[in-house]
Image 1 (tube, chains in turn green, orange):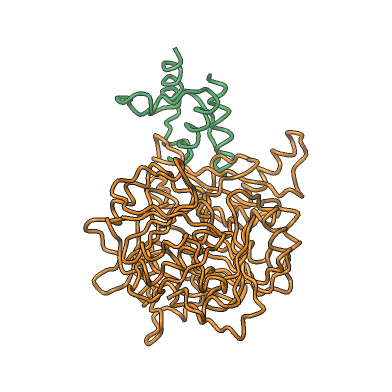
Image 2 (image 1 turned 135 degrees about the horizontal axis):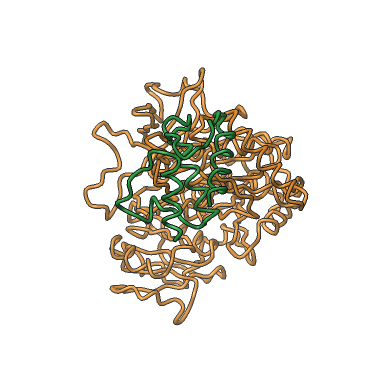
Amino acid sequence: MRSEIISQFQTVAKEQNQKLPQLSDDLVLLDSGLDSLCFAIIVARLEDELGLDPFTASEDLEFPITFGDFIKIYENRAE
Amino acid sequence: MLSAEKYISGCSLVALDASVSLGDLSGASSLGGRLEELRGRSVLVATRDQLTAALALIELDGIARRLVLCPCDVSRERLPLLAAIAGVDAVVSDETGAAADAGIPGIRSFVTCTPTLVRNDSDRGESHLTEWILLTSGTTGAPKMVLHTLSSLTGAIKGDRKLEHSVVWSTFYDIRRYGGLQIFLRALLGGASLVLSSADESTGDFLTRAAAHGVTHISGTPSHWRRALMSPSAHKIAPRYVRLSGEIADQVILDRLRACYQDAAVAHAFASTEAGVAFDVRDGLAGFPASIIGQNGVDVEMKVEDGSLRIRSSRTAAGYIGSLGENLAGADGFIDTGDTVELRGDRYYFAGRRDGVINVGGLKVHPEEVEAVINRHPNVQMSLVTGRKNPITGALVIADVVVRSDSQPDAADAGIQRLKRDILDTCRRALAPYKVPTLLRLVRSLEVAPSGKLARL
């Protein structure tokens, strides 16, 4: 799961010509250099790869602040 | 009226398995001698075949109070509703027995139409200014019923029988749709013959048949033409005039048609069922000269307001029927076509349908704009851009692409990936990031709706 998410972040950042900092769990997503279009694409690609979209599936989901939060949302949903 | 001697003499209608010399209609009828029974009635013309529909329309203009033109792809379940809206009390069909019973209440006459004419001595005197009801060919939603007269329908046609006697028309359109009806009327008023398409025939077979009948003038949508150019039979016809309408004609399709038909004038027209024929463009370039906007004292007045093209002319429809409270034209008499345009230099370019916009995080994307960029790639035959729901931005842009048959990538995965990357690079160079497809699929074919337009979901 984690490696798939990292790989999508890197792919999309490269496509959108964004330089991605080290993807540590405490990286604040807003500081990652990725805009909402990038996140939208990442979520769509992850839905295709993993078969799940936690953001649509859950109504009262809090939006992730850090990269760690983001991964946790997917891990929780997959359980 | 259309059955007047001056229109029908010398014309032939050629269908897949029958043809009729229209001159034979004087003193004979396709309606089994029951023409008089339909006088003053509201007639639903719901034939399977285009030839029988054409004959019925010619005979009934000036006789029926109202003619409702029903393309053969309209589902039978929809007919009772359409008939009720149009106050239909008679049906013309080319089917017999149970198949012909469309289950429409209130029908007093059920008349069978055949391409085999029978003797008819009844008076053909014109008694009605017949209303022609057409269904819109919109790519989304239920069709609307639009009210025309023969005079609004023929406003753009300068029939000159002397000039056109060597012309053989054909069209990929069903003649019961606005784009096809224009060609049908053009042939009649010009004294030319017309080769009708058929829903039972492949594009290649149709082109072969059109070639056999020496077609000189032929029309269709850009989607019709993209499909035609995929056929090995495309080279069998040698038209002098090629016409596109109904969708945006991009530069690529214009150039490919010119390369394929070097002796032909290639023109693209702007017309819609509601607004009628506005103009055609013959300089071989996409878009149209900005100078035609805002002219006074012309047949067709045009303006651009809120980004979309507005039209006022005697060729526009009189209104919708059955759409309560929905006005066709604004208070100033202009019809909003819903087609958005952008000014670049001294030319306007069509950007797409206003109601087809994909909203990516508040930013608007016209699918047609992205398709035009994808279609510029030399390996691409045609493409369809749609929106995909997304929890972050509301929607994302995705694309389905048909590759040209002469440039299929290696079956190997690497070839396919390289082509996809290459197409996306083309998009990234030409488009803002939010307009670039986030997913690109190579597909074998794209559905073209019976209206001739790319089917948009």
